[in-house]
Picture (cartoon, helix red, strand yellow):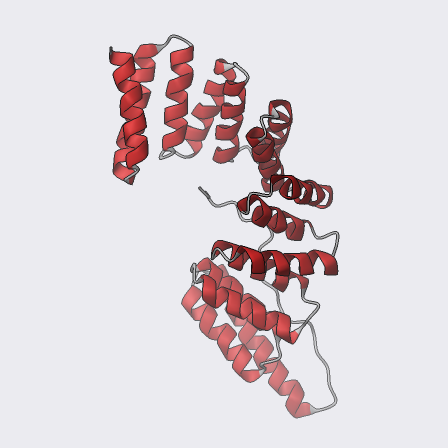
Amino acid sequence: MNLGHRYGLSLLLALSFSTSRPALAQSFRNAEAALEQGVIYVQQGQLDDAIAAFQSAIAIDPSLAIAHYNLGLAYREQRQMQAAADAFWQATQKDASFTMAYVNLGAALLDGGNLDQAENYLQRAVTLEPQLGIGHYNLGLVRRKKGNLSTALDSFLTAVEHSPQAPEVHYQIGLIYLQQNQLDGAVQALETAIDLDSNYPEAHYNLGITYFGRGNSELALANFDRAIQLYPAFGHAYYSKGLALVELDRTDEAEQVFQQALNLYINQGRNEWVTNTQAQLDRIRQ
């Protein structure tokens, strides 16, 4: 689940330009004007117009790497991942040192499931700019997706050195510690993520899971409640809250909460979790 945390995405404008060739200078100014208009459209939520503006900038000056890059960001906002990847790749071809183009190319390929290529481009990004936290972060996401938890953790720990204020990095570290059953480390990382962003439902939920694993159902319950408050359609938070209530012998409340989870899972078409939740309800009602 991704509820909207977006680390490291930003639009860019062209650098100022001067030349002794008036025609070339005018052409660049026209391309820059189209680029700037595209940024305005994105800020206004008019993505189709933004894409047209960025394409206009590219038509005027195909070498303008920033226009290709911003076009890629606009396509990513529309979830057109192949088009986004193509645009980011074009940006790297126009400027081989454009680190953020490699970063976002890797991210688009990750979203599209092309993990090996994503890892290659992200490795290129962190080679160009070793202190770029977002590059190490996305590299960690790829490696975690590939099941390489130790190298993913190394990437996230490097990312947190360079981007200590990014809650998503601490959150990912917490997830790996939780998966490795290193519960003290998971608590520390997830609490740091929440300190940086208190409105982070996934972090509250997984902190609740961690506390539940440590046998502290009261603290687990508080975090599940916060996750539900932030994201009322969070079925797993209701389900886990029900488990915590059972552990606290509050079975009447647990039954109500499991019923809420069941209704959400039915509406979301999550049949496996419908079965799991119904089994919990049946067990309580025996």
